[in-house]
Structure formats: C-alpha cells, structure tokens
Image (cartoon, rainbow, N blue to C red):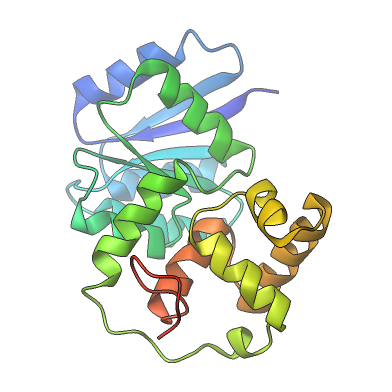
Length: 222
C-alpha cells in the first residue's frame, strides 16, 4: 500500500515542487495540500494521511501549533517538519509538539522520498546525528524540567539504554555496545517508551535533554 501524504506549506511553488518529486515514487501518494496550518489540521482530520510534510512558518496557524493539534487528535499520523535552516529555533518546539523528525527544504529528491518512507514506517528518528545536534543546541538554552515519574520507574539497564538512545544510537549500535542481542534492546526500548509516555524515539531524545538525563556534548548526567 502507498504512503498517503499531505503537503502543508504556504508557498505554492514549494508544494508543487514536492508534489512533482513525489509523483515519481510508486509507493508514495500525495492526497492533498494545505497552505496554512489551520488547513493542515482540517485536512488531516478528514483524510487521515500517514505522513504530513509540515512547514513551520505559515499564516493563520503556524506549523508548531498545527503539529500539536494533529498529534493530539490523531497520534498515529507522523509529522515530518520542513525547514529552511538546519538550526531553526522553532524546530525544537515542533519536535516537542510531537513531530517525528525534520528535513531541510533543499534536501535532494531521493532523500525526501526516503525520509517519508522512514517516518511513515515508524523509524521516527530521521537523520539521528542532525536531529540530535539540533536538540543539543537548543536544550542548552532551556532549564531542565523536573524529573518525570516515568523516569524514576526505569531500571538501571533501561536508564543505560535510554541514555544511549538519546545519543542517537540505533538499536544495533546499543546492542553492540552493551554486548546483548538486538532483540533485547528492542524490548528495552519498547518498555522505556511506555514508562516515559513518549510516542517515538524523537520524543524520548527531547525528554532526555529536557530532564537533564544527558547533557549536550557529555555522557554524564546533571
């Protein structure tokens, strides 16, 4: 089955360009476009797409609030943020609102399609090193929040896995570092997300920095 996509951007040429690129992908179908955040919220509630390509700076309702509203009512929809700059201060807030990752608007066509597939198939942390760098950059500007109850429920091993996950490591990389099977790490990650109440790996990374579980550029806790 094709991944059903909605493109939300206030620039017609941008929407047309993305639609043209994705038209050549047999497993991706653009089902609608939105010129404002409010239109994106309305369209997604009616059409239930798999992925929303969401611009941040749009009139009427910005992409951050639109993302928050979409995820609140339809948590299974994956939002992929589109930004002009890889260190856009608003991207952090968009990830916190529930976005599953981000792409630069000048991304090569094949990477756009690959990113949609990754997000659509549940691989939430798109481009881990870039996403982690962005989160680190803006986490330094924020005061850590109080430790969440779920964090206290993590076992020592789960906390260890959580810290490695927050560093952008894949399940396979974590398994190699801890000398255990990858299936064991998958089980740990599932339990960690349930205890923390996060929807995907991106949200787990954001929470790790916000709680001070890990700090930018270091492997120690605060």
